[in-house]
Amino acid sequence: MQTRLAGGIAALQQATTLEELRAAVSGLRDQYEVEHFVYHSVNSTGQQYAVLTYAADWVDRYIEQDYARIDPVVQGCFRRFHPVDWKLLDWSGRPARAFLSEAIDAGVGNQGFSVPIRGPNGQFAMFTVSDRSGDARWRNFTAEHVADLILIAHFINLKALEIERGTDYRALHSLSPREVDALTKLAMGLNRAQAADSLAISEHTLRAYVESARFKLGAANTTQAVARAIAEGFVLI
Image (cartoon, rainbow, N blue to C red; front, top):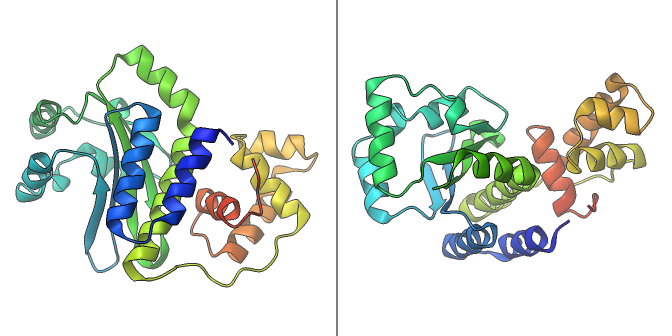
């Protein structure tokens, strides 16, 4: 694991308040040399909380105008399970285009990449990185750092849940060597087919190991299982 990512995750894990979490997120944003890191969560009762680096005026404006109902990023992530580049979302409607123009003027950035997160008890959250840069630079940035950004997203979510209402971890059982192998390959950025091939097993068998590990870790999905396995020291990359 790169020193930058390891140091950032260590700072996230040490946070005990939302202010400390905000400071850790800001530090990560600076290390990755982009404009903004943003975490936004909605729990099963509709309560919201956020850890972000946007200007306060823009946050107030966004809430006042209830922009979440027209924001293609929120709407797109709510229907997805995989990270998405903002340019792949539907900005064709007039309200969406007007919203984007206002967001850019507010310093949000013309480029964005968002990771949907689904946590326990109906929680929906997303982690976003945004910047002012050209298309080529942004493609290179997201391609190089996508694995980092997914892990950061889930570490922030786990810490935010812990701060908001106490730890969401279940008592953990030991993972089997094959479960650790499967999660390690996925943590390294391999897809399921590549991970199965590298372990000389079928994709069906790999899926069985991953699902077993996910259950033991109390994770809502595979990406969260990888993040928890790293946090608990089962997986070292």
